[in-house]
Image (cartoon, rainbow, N blue to C red; front, top):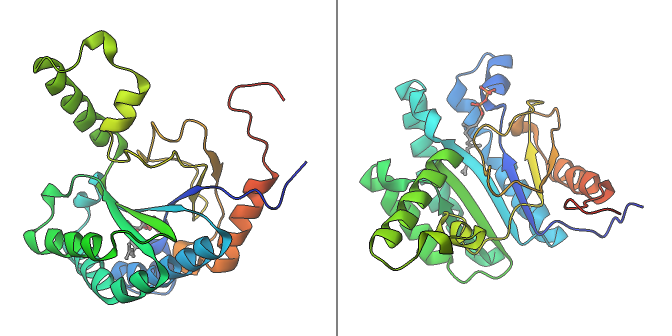
Amino acid sequence: MSDPTRIPQHVAIIMDGNGRWAEQRGRERYEGHAAGVEPVRASLRAAARRGVKYLTLYAFSTENWGRPEKEVDALMELFCQSVVNETPELIRQGVEVRMIGDRSRFSEKVQRYLEEVERRTAGGATLTLILALNYSSRSEITRAVRRIAERVEAGELAAGGITEETIDRALDTARVPDPDLIVRTSGERRLSNFLLWQASYAELYFPEVLWPDFTEEEFDRALDEYARRERRFGLVK
Ligand code: FPP
């Protein structure tokens, strides 16, 4: 039986389709990314309204550095501008912002802007917005394994003492519950190196809509679809 009141605690979104949205309109790709900011606001509003506690957005993958320099620069500028412009509203809404991914590759300016928004929104209790920036699962897991190996080398931890919890705590998502629902827009049906460890029991949902056209109603539709699914976690009914 579907339970319309069943709300995922953590929703993660692969925001896909900005480039196609722009191309369909004969515009530059970066204009598609700029048009992707309003759906971020809409998703935050909808998530807060429905009682979702964690919203993770895949904003920039480790592979995205391979895009034309002009597009990468435009995206960096958009992240900086967005965090500066949106911070007062995020604080007002009680949104705490966190980043996952390897931020060391970003310019000092971008790192400063990201630290600033994390610092200023810390303690927001309505929901946590997690931005995946220069993120890929394999890179995150590799960094986690290195950290654990360092603890073993230092004699703080026995190899036999490594548990799933040890790994969970070494990931960028430490202390964040696993996503219950992962949404990828634009009809693509892949996880593309996103939260592979954490997605073990997530429900997956692939609406056709391109990210710039994603609205609060689309977010609600994703939650309705989630409420209809039966999650068994490997158990029987
Ligand atoms: C994927 O579409 C989208 C991105 C790589 C960038 C996502 C960034 C935003 C939505 C900007 C706003 C974000 C924040 C956090 C302020 P694509 O370019 O791969 O689309 P395509 O597959 O149609 O080419």
